[in-house]
Amino acid sequence: MAIEQNNPTKKPNTPTSNSSGGGSDDDKRRRRNKPRRDGKGSNNQTNNSTTPKSSKGKGRRAGQNSQALATQGPNSTTDIDPNISADDAADDAAAKAEGGIKAIGNQRLIPFMSLEKPMAILSIVLIIGSILAIAINGLNLGLDFTGGVSADVRYEQPAEQVEVVKALADNGFDDSVVQYLGTRQELLVRLPPQSDNINGLNATLNQALDLPNNNAEISNVNIIGSQVGNEVYLNSLMAVALALTCMLGYVALRFQFKLAIGAVVALFHDAIVTVGFFALFGLPFDLTVLAAVLALIGYSLNDTIVVYDRIRENFRRVRGISPRQTIDLSLTETLRRTIMTISTVMLVVLAMLFLGGDGLYWFAVALSIGLIAGTYSSIYISSSIPLSMGLSRDDFVVKVKPEFEEEIVTFNDPKMFEQD
Image 1 (spheres, rainbow, N blue to C red):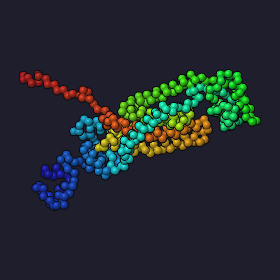
Image 2 (image 1 turned 120 degrees about the vertical axis):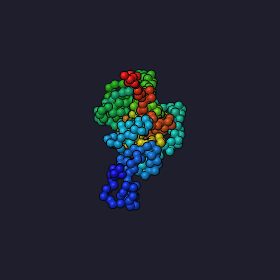
Image 3 (image 1 turned 135 degrees about the vertical axis):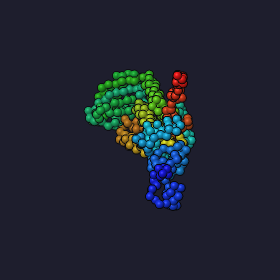
Image 4 (image 1 turned 60 degrees about the vertical axis):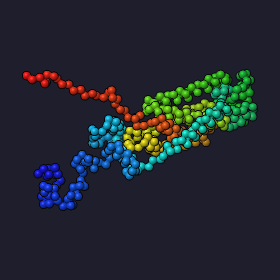
């Protein structure tokens, strides 16, 4: 009877069964194929292929590359083994909070970090070259930084920017900048520094702006001094520095300080490479180009934040792979989103470059250069620097410190042992 109770799957009416455990070979083989009942196996482990195992088993399973990507949801009824260590329990709790443990099997990972050192050398060369170009050649600062003459002009009929620039050049006003103000009849004309005689300048400029069968009327003339231009230049540098500092604080509070260092270095790389390109080829650098640099910082940070969010998620959910493989997995999973984002933004930038006119031309040029640099830095610079600083799962899993663990206190009353 004891054997029948311990083995409920055995049929009591089988004539070959007896108390000594004898039976046919098929019956013995059938019993051996069933799950063990000595604690080394269970029906839950047999039926649930995504149940988390020990870390040793996960590493062996990850190295085999024989299973597809699987995720155990947060509503799973599988309980955490009470015999596992406190560190594993903290990892399981973090994984459950992120949506379940993600097992990596035969999913193909693009080895981005295998090119970490060559790309690091390329980034250093680009940064040093940009700094040397700025120091040696300098920036071809526009009228917003150097000062000059600004005039509001209104024509009787719609005028073309090219015709106005040509008319000014024929009368000795070179390097002029012409922009529309709402309509094609109202324009803003900016010129390099001229004489301080406003009356004579107004008359000369009015004569130069007249087009055939289209007279011009100057409503306002302003002379911007070099001191004002220097203040704008310094304020622009302070704005870029303040933006980078705020980005550092945000990423450090939102994610981790190691990631914040990588993000700020990547943003600095994008900004300095864009400005260095303008210094190397002597392209005009004005407030529109500065606005493109600031917009580029925001775009590049947004792309970096998406990668960082996936890195944090995978460090908490994926087991049995190295930190380098975790970053490769995160970059692989976000690659499609990165390609779609850069493609759509680049279409808009190219439209501004070829159809936006002179007012948006250099703005589009700066953005097109920065978009390429920002996409490159989001993949390599912002990810490789935290990895070289020792980024690991411990940076994302919150563990209870020993001094905050509950202590079990046992109190024995001496009166309990007294005899009446």
